[in-house]
Length: 289
Ligand SMILES: O=P([O-])([O-])O[C@@H]1[C@@H](O)[C@H](O)[C@@H](O)[C@H](O)[C@@H]1O
Ligand SMILES: [Mg+2]
Image (tube, rainbow, N blue to C red; front, side, top):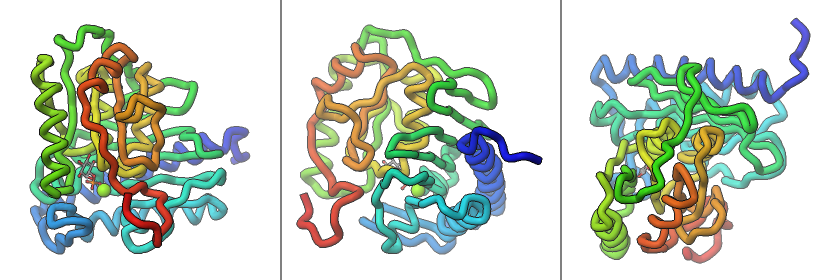
């Protein structure tokens, strides 16, 4: 069969197929109830990783290398093992094998296989497969966002008092960070908003914005692999992306706001405590921020 004139579409089609296969692996482990085996920790006692995270990431990367040998990778578990986290202008697959690993360990049914694809440091397409729900979220820059093939559209709500907000408590238990998390949460809740929710997965919170069931998601402490794939799903569904400072989103900054529109984004950002975690692309020997 002749190669399509659209190589990025070939790559996206491959990502959908390998994300679905990864989801089958995840469901099998959950159904066999052995996902709590081999749970290890990374940056803190509650930043978990399992053998399944590592197996899924190897499956994705090995399958891509055989079809697209010149492409580069940023994978959560590869970076955790010492691979660099640098986004060049080369075609780059940005992979979170299981976004919501803590959910996975506890059989809480919100885990996303996340595969983003960037060229010239711009995310061209994103695939987020909610494996337990069997929902395949996809978007290609300029061509819309979909869930299982049905178009996605963000909420039209502009009144913050009628909005639903999502955030997460993250995996940093430093008392000063916990205080900042609760300070922001207190201000947002007291606006008031209708409610605050958290899926336990940055990517699935962002997909909830894209499908219109949440007006805004914010978090400090996420990583580029948590948000890259879902970032284009949000914008192609008509949403906006910002830094918690109100500036433009910087995928490596570890801060994100994903909202249905600028009105809601501006109103919630005004309530957020701005603080920083170490950038994903920091030089290994630099002093922590
Ligand atoms: O580690 P993981 O499950 O891929 O990603 C998770 C993120 O999706 C979530 O937003 C964050 O609050 C968690 O601490 C964790 O980082
Ligand atoms: Mg992960």
